[in-house]
Length: 434
Image 1 (cartoon, rainbow, N blue to C red):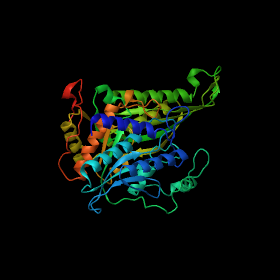
Image 2 (image 1 turned 90 degrees about the vertical axis):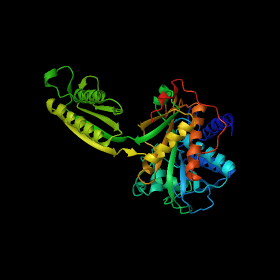
Image 3 (image 1 turned 45 degrees about the horizontal axis):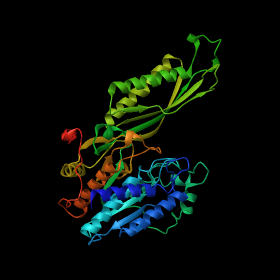
């Protein structure tokens, strides 16, 4: 397969899949179990069949395309990503990993025939949590960790129950396979970075070592609403001022520690929210992430203690609710080593890096050897219609995926040469961080 052909196919398929759920305001909207989601899965199923793959769904709507081994009991190498999007999202998030897997399996089938181990591409039914307050529905069902009790209690913004939506889409009715998988030997997820590091450093491949741990809080600061003109500054119990001091303290601490720690206050509300009244209550969210669990724990403990100390000094009350505590997840060392060698073999500079965003790989990794591979995102923009990755960078990712799947699925050795142009790195090979 010539590099030009691979580039053209990849670019065409990205634009093709984006027509399912194309939003009039720009971007793509494919929410779980909606008509656009269903149409996209059915279209992918047809593409998989045209590529010579066996297709099947599981009971929650994950779609698989299978390149069957001469020994069907030999276990499965799984690659893919999620088909759902955020509202008005981009063309590449999730979709790229599915389409890259589809192209890779087609190439392997046409070039080498049946593998020694089964190789499958999966279009995971859901990851984003954009329709229902639930994330990673596809991968948690595969690993047997899905919060199945929760789905009977949740609904979308239109008050449609989760179970009703699933059944309306044709799933959850007992027609398809149990989603739990016991045969997976490894999981490979190819994804856009959703950050600007690779593009800024002019490196085409990011090899993820770990997905960051993440803690999320809602912090409520309670003071006393009072007249803006008649209450002296020294007597005020200004909840917004106290919250502002808390936020500034946390951000300055994050600056001192530096990368890869990040802290974000994304939402602030106050009451009564009137121009001539001192705020009596202010509420803000706090999202803190770091790839090392001990560093994350220590920073969060210090941040929360600073909130309590500021509240005491200002005569305020503070309530802290922690509603997310995800631990860092390590990717498989042996797969990291394989990807490094593949990049060297293909003359592709790479960077070892953490992932600051969550991915299905973090759900799979505790259960199966897992690799997460990044390609650059233009200006780091994602979850946005302006999301973009060049065809050259997309193709570099597919090349790496093809060789990795060959090594894992066809037992040893390196893939025969794909006809390709050498990637020219302006900063030469010193950018290799392996």
